[in-house]
Image (cartoon, rainbow, N blue to C red):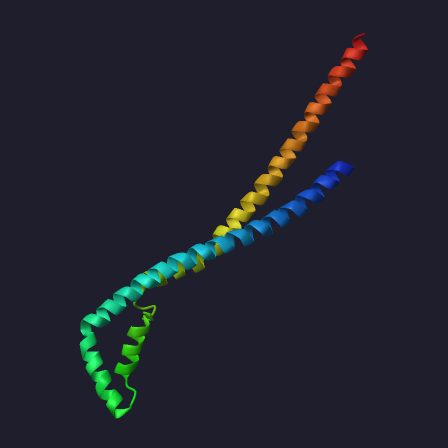
Amino acid sequence: MARLGGWKRIGIIASVVWFLGAGIFTYNGMEKYQREQFNAQFDLLWDKAADKARDKYLSEHPPEDLTKIYAANKQQTKTTEADQELERLASGTFTPDLVVCKDCVLLKEQFLTNHRRIALEASASVAFTTVALAWGLAYLILFLVRWVKRGFINAENSN
């Protein structure tokens, strides 16, 4: 194996440190970005599904009927399912289950299967590309310095 000079050893160490640091930093950033995007999309889909579920429920159970049942039950002072439904509707918290929100389930499955792969690909491409460009730039500068230096040496020898 060829002996490596001091600058090449420093370059290798710097490359490994950069590769690990840039890779981890990019991976964490991409994962955070993807989670934020997933949460925003999931919330939109969930709200849309909740609106559909509430509208469907209200079409099947008109509020007037629930109000009559609620009033009758209040006189008897017992809590029933109709009371809970009316209170839930009044508070505005109507959440569908995941079966109702098929788009939510598909989005979640897509996210779980793809987010790590995408983050790894991005971090690897950033780390590899920058290390390769840095080594290429270093050798280009080294070549240019030696080329200019040879020009001065050749000019001195010809005089």
